[in-house]
Length: 153
Image (cartoon, rainbow, N blue to C red; front, side, top):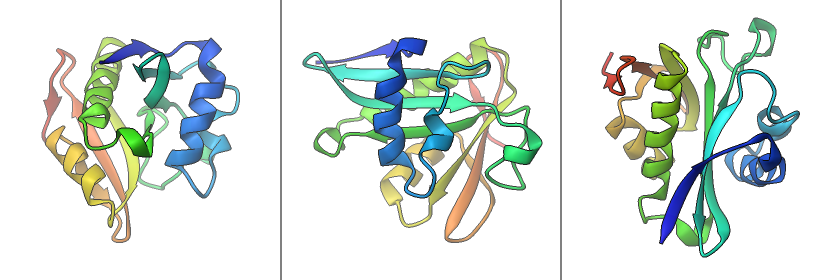
């Protein structure tokens, strides 16, 4: 049985672990000082152990990952343990994260994904993310309707 809970400031090590799975180029960008203003996320747990996480954080203009990003839109990261993939955990985590973004009043969220990661692309597209830019590394955005739904752009 998998349960999903809200991430707290005390989840620094969990976020660090999954950031290292989610980003090969710069994992600390996604976990340094976890719990700062603008950070929010969810964690999946199975058998008393963290099996995945989805989280988001705001970045200043100078720290944006992509020139198409915005300091008004949180940048999302998601990772699921290899042994737990293919069970819908990533989809459930992203749905919960989008709900949090809506509750926090964000108009959209952004993410970066390798175009060869077809499983992730399928999840993101199903949840309303649209390509903004890129070929090999895509920049995607989901627009939030602010009533729990994601708008297709």
